[in-house]
Image 1 (cartoon, rainbow, N blue to C red):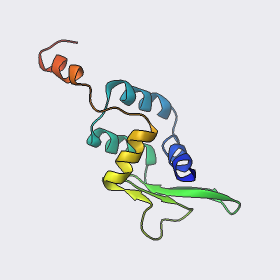
Image 2: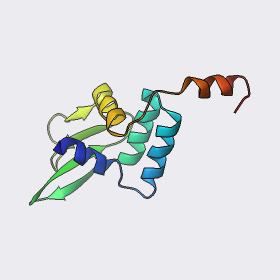
Image 3: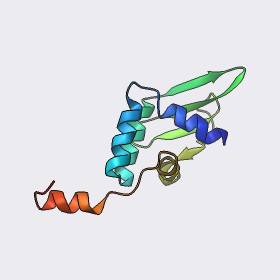
Image 4: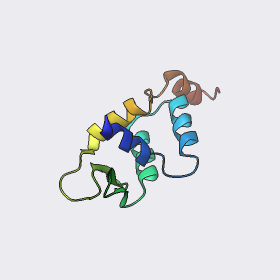
Length: 109
């Protein structure tokens, strides 16, 4: 799906983004952790694409938003809980692993 390909590209704009996603995939993440990662990877008010290709527009910040197309005009294609759910599936991020939480609570690694 074109939306998912564009979203994947937007989530991998910066150096070592793949490593950061791999870390979140390894530890698991709640919705807040995914939202923070999306916001950081999007940055503020960015676009890519051109006249001969479908692009995307996106904005990080406290409520990350994503548009298919080269403009921030109109309602976002994805935002809020729907954006987080799509990113979780696309990036294969499991929920927080219970053993990680329990171990840290009791000083175990």
